Every structure is written in structure tokens, then in C-alpha cells.
Length: 240
Ligand code: SF4
Image (tube, rainbow, N blue to C red; front, side):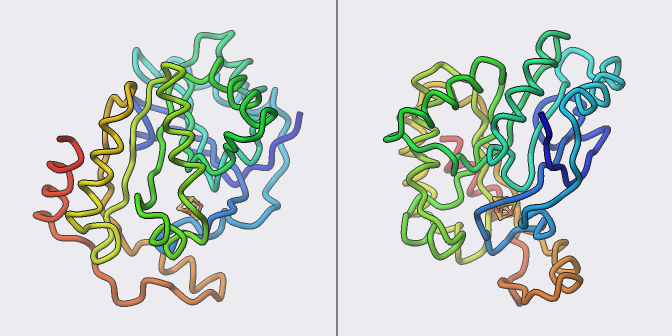
């Protein structure tokens, strides 16, 4: 089984609990205006065998401690769901905690095959970091180029299947920070049973240089990072 990989990070501390080996998979169907990894969008990446990636992760097992483990992110890692399942199967056999950072975009609740495939993933994934881009569907389409319906359906799917979930919301001034939409998000989260944590990630402009390198126009030109107060306020609303 071959995976197309953008890069690896050996001692990640922001994508899930503890110290984590982070695998960045190549490819993403979304085009979030605030994306700081536009270099992961296109197909391509370097090809790796699943056994080789598992061996790389296992070299760091002693550093994982009680909470750490592996996180797959991207891009959208579930574009390569078969690779993720195969990797996690190998790592679960070795007792490694497994985590997926996803937008849930690959989940199609009306398609039995898609549901079955994601169920297979749930058997070997311990934790999901689910990005809710925008609770309002029209605003989500404007922000990412896609509807939020798959994401919200995936959140419900995780809840119904008892799977631990951390919700992530990137806070962008004048786009995702209105009280009304944060409250709507909170109401949605209240319907879920397995949300352990809600993370508010302040928008930052560190990706700008990558857009320049790729010759792409930066969509959020002139948008500043949110203030500390607005981040705190969003945290208060979302955490209820
Ligand atoms: S889902 Fe992630 S990688 Fe894809 S465009 Fe959005 S922020 Fe970028």
C-alpha cells in the first residue's frame, strides 16, 4: 500500500495530545481562504510504502509517553483513507495511539460504501480532530469552496459511534467570529455526545509566503489575526 506524503514532523505538539509523530498527507479538495498549507493541495507528493511509514513512526515510540502517538493530517488525509487504515492497523498492533485531523469532507452519509469505509477507519483510529470550517453552509462554501454537510454528518457519525472527538474552529475576523455563528456552532456541538474538547485556533498570516512562492494570490490579504479578547470570547461561547 502506497501513500502520497507531503512531509513528516517528529515531535509535534499541536495536533492531538502529548508528543506526536505527524504525517502530512498530500492533496486536499478544499480551498480554505485561511489555509497555511497550500503546498499540500495538489495531488502528487512523495510515494511511501505503508510499512516504511509505520517503521518511521515506531522509531519515536519511546517519546510518545502516555498520551502521545501518531497524527495524520494534510492536506486532507482521508483522501487516502485506505492508506490511513493500513497504517493505523500496523500501529495499533504496536500499541500506538492514533489520531486523524480531518475536515470530514470525504464522508458521504448517503453512500453505504463511504459509510462502511469510514467505519473501518473508526476501528483503528482513537481520536478525531474535526475542523468545522463554518456552521453556515453558504458561508462555508464561500470560505472553503465546499458545503459543510459532509463535515456535520461526519461529526454526527463520530458521536453515534462513540468516537472521541476534538472540534477545531479557526477564528478569522469578520468571517468566522460572529457571535451568532459561534452560538449556532455551540448549539450543534451540544447535540453531540463524544466531543472531549473544543479548540479555537486564531487565524495567522504565516502561510502568506507559501502563496507567494506558489504564485497564488493570497485570499485574505489585509485580514489581521484576531485579538486576544475575541479569541477568549469565542472560546467561552464554544465551550459553553
Ligand atoms: S482543509 Fe486544511 S489543507 Fe485543506 S484547504 Fe483547508 S486548511 Fe488547507
